[in-house]
Amino acid sequence: MNVSSKNIEKVVGLAPIAESLLQKFDVNGPRYTSYPTADRFVEAFTEKTYKEALEQRRLRPINQPLSIYVHIPFCESLCFYCACNKIVTKHHERSREYLDYLKKEINLYLDYLGQKQNVSQLHLGGGSPTFFSDEEIQELFNKLKQVFILNPQGEYSIEVDPRTVDEKRLKKLREIGFNRLSFGVQDFNPDVQKAVHRIQPFNEVASLMSSAKQDGYASINMDLIYGLPLQTTETFDQTLNQVISLKPDRIALYAYAHLPQRFKPQRRIHENEIPSAKNKISMLSIAIKKFLEAGYVYVGMDHFALPTDSLAIAKRQGRLHRNFQGYSTQPDCDIIALGVSAIGRIGANYNQNSKGLEDYYDHLNHSRFPITKGLALSKDDIVRRAVIMEIMCQGRLHYESIELAYMVNFKEYFSSEMKLLESFQEKDFLELNDSGIEVTDTGWFFVRAIAMIFDRYLQLDQNRTRFSKIL
Image (tube, rainbow, N blue to C red; front, side, top):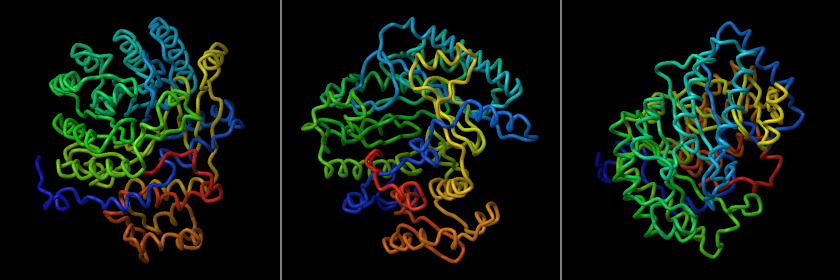
């Protein structure tokens, strides 16, 4: 769908944002895939606490369907920008051992939850899930179907490294049961690809996109990163044109966060080749304008979707949710986390698996859940989580709904936060009235900054450099 700039706001509800405004609010802050954020997890959260949470779920008379996340850490080659938990190896026999341990972990849930738990969402992430062979992916899928009930209308997605698949593999993944794909693209410029050690020509990705559409995937996502070494506004503009020509259903546009002190692969990037903050903002501004003109809906934060995609529909209908994988169409639900470093949630508890492979294996060898840290949420955490997620997902909040659900007087409970919000109202980021908070069209681009106001941990701890920039 081609949309003239004159009709952009009418069609998608948003117009491009001034570059100066983007630059002013490019500050560090959480992504709020959870609240409290994962950096607040503690080692005092034990396997015993986790088992108690599972038992409480099992005894509930009614439960929402589960979401399952499986982390597959292996990659054949190192991408220099990567901040994920991964293991770089060309020894594919390692995946066989890892799969056997995943099956051990799945069996533990059979023991504690029984065999009739419904699942409406499954996501394989990494690393590179396509490091597994088709047979191993099929075996994993079959094991999950033995223990859980996978709803016929569920969302089953897998992250795909375009360098590891061909048209035949995409067709096989569809036959296995996946109905959503996410291609890691990042940038199409050859010089940029060389600088980050990820060569994948446009024509090859275009061919895969065409095949995936023919195979009947319900939604195809593309990941892009701006701020990579050797990127310029001109080269990134060309990448954007190429992406739009392929018309993915969803686009995830991330800012590169250069933190070499935390992520060793980034030490191979030459800092003098990284675009300036001003140029990064220019790239973001260009991307927003181009995606809106191409008919994409700005879902929130760094996500865009075609109006016909389920994510855009969920936003229009007020059904948008957020979990550890980002924006989701699924109702707020418990998440079973499988694999090394995977993060999950059961009720008012967050949990994270061992980050090291040996430790992960050791737990499972002793028939223990590989939980190494987590967090049991306090009442204050739960109230603030509800507020932050309403703002992040719906862009609006009614005081009464929070007051009735959590037995608090909103304006009294959040008196200091209400004062801080007044400055955002002056900038036309939101509207405050007697009944609630409404994020404006402009404010949607800065929704993380608005949500940060309600983050008690962040307000007490001003050290935000461990977080990425919000734009």
